[in-house]
Image (cartoon, rainbow, N blue to C red; front, side):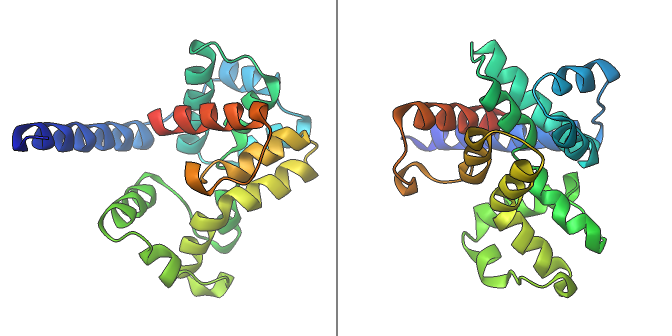
Length: 191
């Protein structure tokens, strides 16, 4: 790849992150969108969705819309799209939140120093920002446990639990599960 191509690609990535940030700080969710989410979630799952900050709800609705526009109609995938980041709410009980600023800092940290978050994270709610890093890393498993408790299907819970796995690290799964997971990761990455 030539230097000009690398610079153009870097600029596009930065521009995409700036757009994501702007969408995050200005996010809203309409009553109609909450009603649409209710079609895919059990009542407790919808309540969990509503506990997420507006920017996280907006992100999840955007993931769902991206999947639907791409032709995906699987109800388990739809529920996973809506709840895939719900585990991040775990930090809220301790006064820590994942807002647009926090997520931007985490994305930057992952890009600049891969693995640093894992080295600094502590599984102790008294750990402040270091606990926030733990929740950031463990939110797929936390969200999957909550989704199960909220009455979501085993497939939905599996998709939530694995939505951040790299392709090469995936556990053995059926072809159908793998296709749904790939779709969820694709839509999440676009939003």
